[in-house]
Length: 171
Image 1 (cartoon, rainbow, N blue to C red):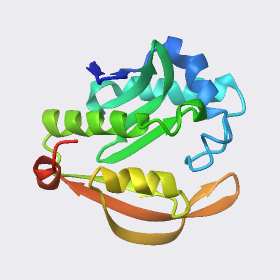
Image 2 (tube, rainbow, N blue to C red):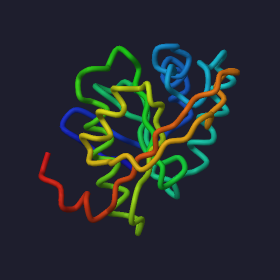
Image 3 (cartoon, rainbow, N blue to C red):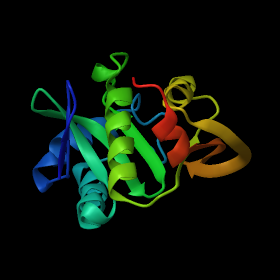
Image 4 (cartoon, helix red, strand yellow):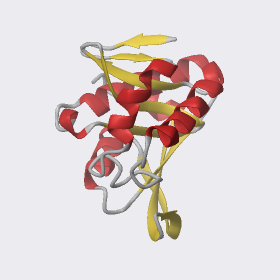
């Protein structure tokens, strides 16, 4: 499965994506808001990538390529919850928004999901801005929802309905 945007290719993960995804998932800057600490070794990323590959088309979850290089992932490892992560070298360019918009368009086209969800750390201002630009609205808050490397994290919950997505102004 492949989705092209003006600057990116979203595609199904492959075993040869291991080194590139490890570069993302082992970077403490990239994983500051992720659900796990930075990956300690390639074996940990290999297990993670195998899970992404095993989900196949049942879960529209994609690696993100820019100029032929894998720079992150976006999609729905556990639908309807969206997730994304980019290597920090590619932050601040609108690429996460471009990728997420394409993934959302895709999931609303090929599934009957009526709403999407997101779980974001309240201190992750960039991700909150991205979700709100995409039309997600805050639906809740909970304390101590994720234990990441021995540290408890809180969550803001966000939602996006199919009808709101379809009624949005073109980007």
